[in-house]
Image (spheres, rainbow, N blue to C red):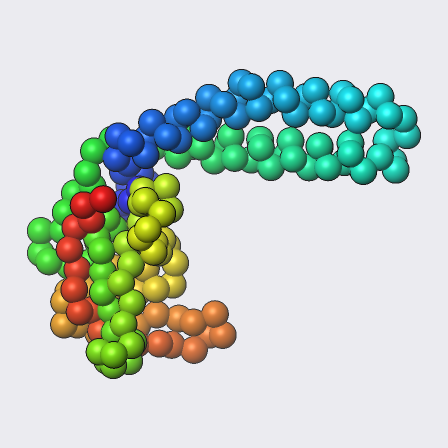
Length: 166
């Protein structure tokens, strides 16, 4: 999955189908299962000290959050390949290799996309992450800077950027 500035999410057909199936499961059989767990736990008595009831309600909350996330994601989804950068600049949907502080022995290769887009064998960084947003728009050979969690800046050199073909 990749995102563009228009808040469009690009998904492969496989990723779209997988997420749609997950949403259908969560809004159908999974809701029935969690409702049954809550009802069974409620019958056990005092709800204030009922660990099973509270665990089931927490699970229900997480499940409903995922339903909202998937619904929003699929509403903004376009199936197909994300547009490729025509000027050679790093863009969402690309596999990027960087060198930390210009050290070509200290490199990282990752897919610039959201986790739903890629297969599990590709390390993925979100375009909204500090590193992801730092490299977007830079070309091979250029240096890019991003902010570390401690507030300091780090520098990387773009070694390679090519469209993801997963």
